[in-house]
Image 1 (tube, helix red, strand yellow):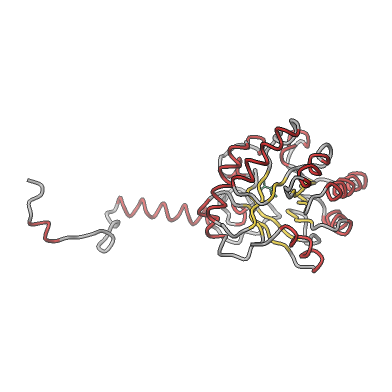
Image 2 (cartoon, rainbow, N blue to C red; image 1 turned 30 degrees about the vertical axis):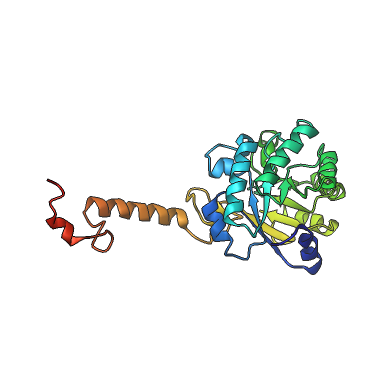
Length: 274
Ligand code: KIV
């Protein structure tokens, strides 16, 4: 299994880091066969798995359940779990309980959003043995404050603040920082400013690694195709087509066919229906 200190070595060696979200056992079993460096049980599961409009609806119980399923499916992968909305803002005691639930469910590390007001908690968690990944730029848990899912740090002032926040996360002890939807120039400056790696989503190539939501990479939702996602497969449309063909075959009497069920000809003679 990859280890948390590997992140810093990968950055030092210029080795790009790969991370994908993963929410369930079946997907984890498949991703376990790949070279992906880390699986992120993202709170995006509230949206892509549970159908909520935003990640605000994720809960500690939800995240723990998905983390445990991913751990069972990928026992040898590094698993990072998102701390859900407000679970780390209601005092250290509540935050520790949330972290404890995720780590006991199988996470190797946790991720939380934003820097302001989180520095002390991060220092405390790291000192307590919990690796913490930061998340800056478009922080979906703050979607109401941000006014939507849009590119962040587009002005000089905002870019300077983002770099300060990234440095604050590094100082607090984060082993890596996710950067979401910031201009490529800003992502590059943050990456150069930090010793720890940046993992980008919608930030271009000048970061230490990339993360994507697995559902987007697979095109599970054909109606959602963000510009920054490359669709490596069209599973959603293929699934629709497969399910449609199955329905037609059943209705037309083409499924099940010979070889797709058990036949014991002798039983036809036994009169078991009498
Ligand atoms: O929850 C999530 O999927 C994430 C990624 C977008 C980084 O935080």
